[in-house]
Image (cartoon, rainbow, N blue to C red):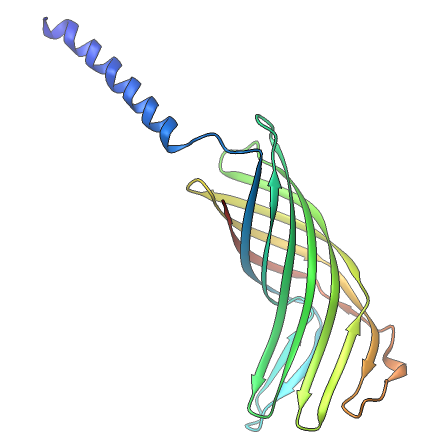
Length: 210
């Protein structure tokens, strides 16, 4: 066998081996995949202010802070569209020696993505927020603010790292309406009912698909 005939055969074998390895590294993805995510967001009106003995203070914001969640994403084979549904827990708060203040809520999100750009996805969707509550705990008792369920809008842009990790930048447009406010004495503050708080927020999260 001469060099002129050996080299083309060697090149063909290398190309075939590379194709096989690429196929092994990136197996077909299932249509429905579970995933988890976690991230941070910032923004919104001040709901409560925690004051400390050293005169420092921390504002609890309607659009903050940490959010974790889990859900499913569905994408038919060959489709450039995907849909994700998640259940989440979001909290902003601070703790001191004599008390704490925190804002908690449970958002359910539904997002539709366009995935036709390599390693990018662009999503729009909605989220329904339940059990939104501010608790301001001191030695004198608890101030408690409960909010009505609310619906917000989501815009998200994600970038795929590797095979199953997404870095997502997102914006959320929503607001909260106060339903009841009970002060530390256990009395309802009637004239506070119906007050609205803007909760627009921007954030980033990381999601991992299984």
